[in-house]
Structure formats: C-alpha cells, structure tokens
Length: 310
Image 1 (cartoon, helix red, strand yellow):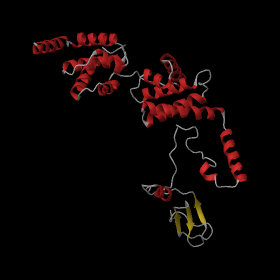
Image 2 (image 1 turned 60 degrees about the vertical axis):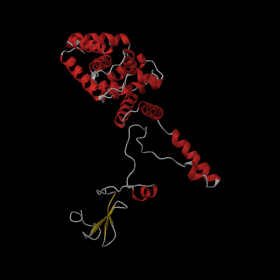
Image 3 (image 1 turned 180 degrees about the vertical axis):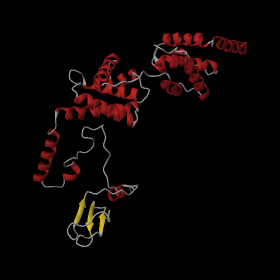
Image 4 (image 1 turned 30 degrees about the vertical axis):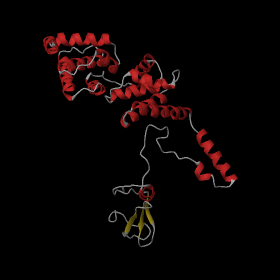
C-alpha cells in the first residue's frame, strides 16, 4: 500500500494505515489519503462485555430473518433517555415513533411475518441455515405479491416447509401445522403454490431422511438402525418405495429391523412416532417382506422366541 500510493499534497510515500479510524494518513504532512479502508487482520476474540466494547471492530452479520437485514438502529431506548430533560425525552420518543412509521407495506409485512418465522423455527428446533432459507423464500414471495389473498401464517408455514425440503431436514406437514395451528391441507396447498410461482424445483423426500430421526425417538440401538438402512437401500434398488409415502416406508423398515434384531416395537409405537396409521405400517411391512424375501427370516425368529418361552 505504501509503495503504490503517494500523498497528493506533498508527494511523500511515507504513509501509514490508521486501522482504528479506517484511514490512510501521510506521516509528513498529515493529509488523509484514503478513507474507509478495510483492516485485513484477524478479528480479536472477546470473552466479556468490556472486551466486546473495546475489541469488536465490526457489526453483526447480515441476516434474512429480519426485515432490515439487521442494519437498522433503535432511536432512544428507555435506558438511554430516562435521565434526559423532558423536552429532549419527548423529542426522542417522537423520532422513535416516526422511525417505525416510515416504512413500506412490504417492510411492515416482513417485520411481523419474520418475527413469527423466528418463533416457529425455535419451536421446531430448526438450524440457522434452514431459518435463513425460510426467510429468503418468504421475502421473495412477499415482494412478488404472493401473500395477497392468503393468511400470513400459511405463507410462512409454506416457506418453512419448502426450506426444510430443500435442505433435506426431516420435518413433516403435521409438525409444522401443529406449530402454527393450521390445517395440513392449507399449508400443503400454499407450499405448492409458492414453489410453482417462484420456480422452485424440490425433489421428493427420501425415506432415508426420516430413518435416523424415527430410530432416535424409538430408542433403537445402532444395530437396528443399520439394519433398517440396509432394508431401505434394498427397497430403493427394487423400486418398492416408488409412489409410496416416505414416512410410512421408513417406519415399516424400522419395524422390520426391530423384529430381526430382537428389539421389538409395536406397530402403534412406530405409527405414533412416524405420524402415520397402523394400517399404513402393516401394508408397507407386508410389501417389504414379500419383495425382499424376509418372510422366512421373520418366521424363524418368531419360532425361536416361542421355543424359548416354552
């Protein structure tokens, strides 16, 4: 930087960067050669509030989960203005009020919708990347006018479901509808509408996305989970899963694997965890046994158990 630039006032190349002020200064005459320079050095670590105040050189990162991307400031918080004279206090209150009023209809909509989105993401325990993706999808939908004529909650729910599907995060429509208190059909309809209007191509979910989660909720051991994954891989190769609900297939594979490894779970337990009916479990269970040739293995295990009981 010193070799490439010279002071325009005195022609000296004896320059030094003032990283605290973000300026390039001439040592000879004191002229400011350049402003707002970037400090490429490593950011200081901070361990308490005092170090944060003295060491931090940058603000918070941009985020799509806030209507202003996290860049706006608050005018006159209560702790700042409580010791000021009454006339100045009124001035700050008035400025704060107008700061909230000077915004477009889309910004006001985003402010309320993204607040609801953050709350629901916390309830569903979604990762940061899924939450950011949901906010980005909702903002695109709002700016394209897709929220008109629909409830804000249903569009937020559809955006969350679309983001979960995009990032292969196993969340069902039932879980999202329970978090919002909306009907599953309404969320599904809004989700399909958003994807169609925004040109989003989302692949169907795979049973593999749900196996580990269902296994954890059923308290199955790693051996059973591995067996269920093997069953699903065989089913995918033979295209048994084609046209069937992924949650039902995943639940049935875990049910079969639990029988084979001696860690039996009832159909009712598996159905409750997967959010499907017992009839679905039974139908998928019979299909897996017939297509994969596991009937003899199950029969042999049942005979051994009956012999041990006797």
